[in-house]
Image (cartoon, rainbow, N blue to C red; front, side):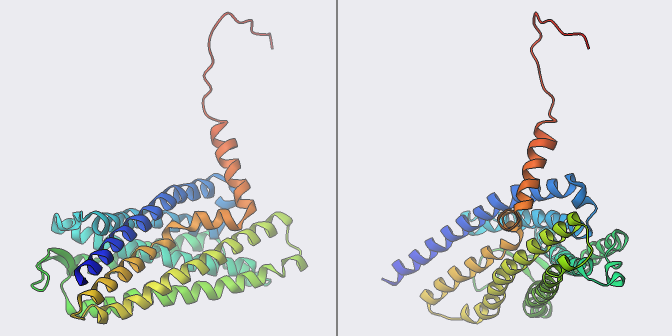
Amino acid sequence: MSSGVIASFDYATQQMAIYINFSNLIIGIPGGLLNIIVFLSLKTFRESTCAFYLVIVSFANLGQLINGALIRLLISGYGIDWTIASRFSCKLRSFLTQWLSLISFTCLCLATIDQYFATCSRLRWQQRSNIKVVRILSIITVIFWALFSIFYAVYYDIVTPVTTNKTVCMNTNADFELYNSYFQRNVLQGFLPNLLTAFFAILAYLNTRNLAYRTVPLVRREHDKQLTRMLLVQVIVNSFSLLAYNIISIVIPNVLKSTNPIVLAKARLVQILSYSSYYFYAAWPFLIYVCVSERFRRQLAYVLVVKHVQHCPKFAFVGNQVIPDT
């Protein structure tokens, strides 16, 4: 009886990993590419400091989906783990996972802060939102987190624990694992970015409600409202998915110490569910932008149809035709 229950939970775990991660990839990779195309194709976004951050976020999210969700799909769904093929692949994946996620969270925080500055009524605060500062902060973010993530390349390695007798790519330093479990995973990649993005996104939203009473050009006003609304909903979705992941990450290690096989099977199911839904932050931005912003939908259609499709080379048949004089 218990073996049948365990098999059912294991099957559900496998199917959950396949469907959620596959959905993340199908939605996130084309969506991330479309975000980048729209943000880089339109002048209104190219001149926006907030959109500059969102381009970096989109690139980081694409990398995270390929390095994270795809690998998670192969490992949990099909039992294919390329990270144990060599020490290099193990260390590279560990480095990229942390580096890309930290870039994404940091630049999203900076985007909400920048949007708050851009929508402030005081000129002194508005001047803090300029492209020169944004580029400097972006470069610092990328370099700083790259140096920081080197620790993961150092401490992660291929090991075969005696308890499971299964080769895995995991952390080999107990002190660093303690730091990773309670500070890195739950503070730097969870509660801290959630609090910062929520705080400044709400402030920016409150600022946009007062734009009608200020002498702001109509195009600028609509642009600020659009970006603020897109950011606010993205922050809300991120907060729910990351909060669930953080809570389960704190609770699940104690549950996995159980000797009850049914409890362990249930814990694995919950763990895979949280790990897979963690990548919602990287997969859903495009879907969020399309759903909450009618202006973004028009911009997307314009970029795809007018700027790209209509500008493609047109091939004509050469036949017996009379070409009018011009």
